[in-house]
Image 1: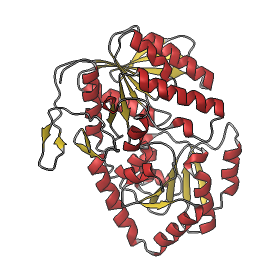
Image 2 (image 1 turned 45 degrees about the horizontal axis):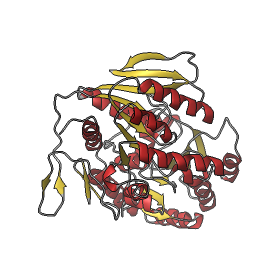
Image 3 (image 1 turned 180 degrees about the vertical axis):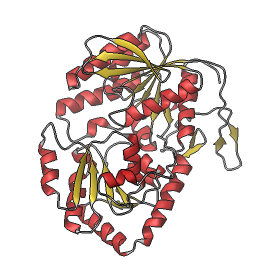
Image 4 (image 1 turned 30 degrees about the vertical axis):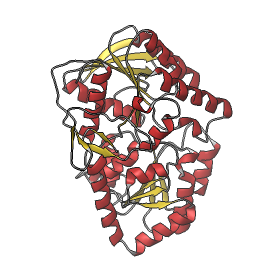
Length: 408
């Protein structure tokens, strides 16, 4: 059992190093952590995302939250940002966070060139590097050569995603291996990810820190009215349109079940065409509505808070930020049945593997709506137990302080 912040984390069957400060033994064998802020000021550089303010996904949202938290604690923080429209590198300040904006396109080659330009620029300045994701983990050798401490969040098992071709999977697997070897310390957001990474490096080099979220206790219903929705009268799905997120199976289940409450889908199904997106749209019945990709956090928070239940179909990866946000909103959760989701959502959620499983769950909840209240309470309890946002951010601060050479 590893303890992160004040969070107890069930460890994989390996000895994984915890993020600890002022730890003392307790009678139950766990170690309680008392994290104390000090006057020490770090120079932290966050790389690997498209930048802040967050307008893309989980890593960007986390980079925004962590950078603002570290600034509030007196540290100097730089976040590297990717810009399609910029023609030259620029630097500015956003809410006390130093931003380095690097021009680059969003296609694969452009992203690699952005990561390389980021690495070269970042390596010229002293400080501790936090790399979010390993897609170009091999570039971390530069930080090694410059003797810059580099903490890397290894995200999920990206190379297992169905959308990648064999050459792409090989590239991602190689970078997972290289990132695990070149980074000074690794962060796994899930015990199963830590167990997976152990094949590449020593377990003492790995810390388990999940994502966190603040409890959502209210949200305006006026936002729902803009979409023609009523509280607790719809189900919600938030996911990128990718096969391993079980979107097609979920849409088919709702289209077949013919229940009154519609399925609201957030994600981009317009723009760049793909066969998978076409499959999803064609499979959708009249009770499935696509609202598009929404990055306004207030709107998403309201849609999530007032949903009847949150549907989570992710099959690949560790701790998914969207699932944690749903725990924070106190949602009843229906998730794909796999070892990643079961650890995050806990025993109070309901799980499905096939379309028919989900149909049966939906019918059961429609007939026995009392179950929803129990599921909501279980989600709120699970967040308090494992995913307190401030404790997660404090754990990152502690780990970065250690990497920066401060003996805490």
